[in-house]
Image (tube, rainbow, N blue to C red; front, side, top):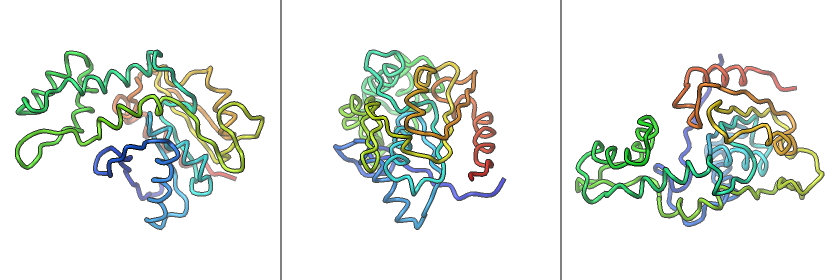
Length: 242
């Protein structure tokens, strides 16, 4: 296909991005919009996974003129209750990271052993451990702002974004969809984050949406089935918008 410039964006409190006590979706969508402006990008294709998928959706709803099309990986524009098994799976990862005694480990292998007590999937542990870095004095720390993320989890599970011009996306409005660009939702067949019961809410907010499922993938689609996801993404990007 056509070569594309790709930006890998660390959300606030993640990777090398600044830390902040605020993690609302409107704030993080504003971060993305600011980045695009700073880079001189007038319109972009956005792709986000999990909570990043919610940020991508919020950006499309709040700044639709900036988003050429949207791809959301295993996430719906809905609120997830803390007791739901799928949201609890995210909570459990954060809790597991808390069990790593950073002052007593001498290698990532030590951290992996601590995580393995509560996180059985070695692939997921490897994904989490990408956030563990060694400081100049030889100690380890999490790159992510774990305190802020943990405090923000109830807010991140919810969905209270409002689009422009009174376009409500909380299910209380009869307005037409707020984002009218091509939108693709990709679900993991072994995940419960994206379900048929969510289709009505998706259609309210994203009028030109399609849905694809990778049956063999869990929530961590890009780690489980990267080749299948790449094929789906390439096909989606090649479809011409009117």
